[in-house]
Amino acid sequence: MADRLLSEGIVSQVQEAFAQLNHPVQVLFFGSKSDCDYCQDTLQLVEELVEISGKLHLQTFDIDEDAAVAKQYNVDKVPGLVIAGRDGDKILDYGVRLAGIPSGHEFSSLIQDMILVSNRDSGLDSDTREFLGGLTQPVLLQVFVTPT
Image (cartoon, rainbow, N blue to C red; front, side, top):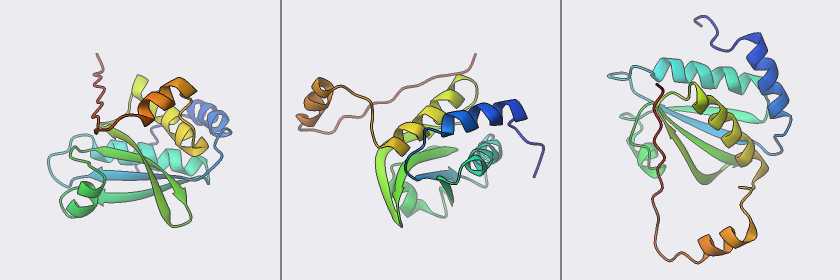
């Protein structure tokens, strides 16, 4: 493996944050062997995170070779991550997706996503949950960020 991406200090901070993990988390990584500048770095980052906690599990897929799996999880960009729950062999898909390398401020979002999925609670208040429960048509919500 190349040099580690996460310093000892960052690993220590992530270990503290991961103390909040309650249930297993399944991370699905989607990459490509061609035309993907950040696939290898993203995979290495996720591999280093999964090493920190026994509650984290990783599966890797090639978006072209595993097109059916990518379609199942609505992943169309690489590198792509699905942060899902895991109950035995069953994957609990909460719809959490990340596209691109989660660096900079997005690294914190990745850690927080893992904690939220592990705890099986979005933290939304009851009024928001009630509103969302009343939706009758699918809603696509995408948040775009760019490091500057």
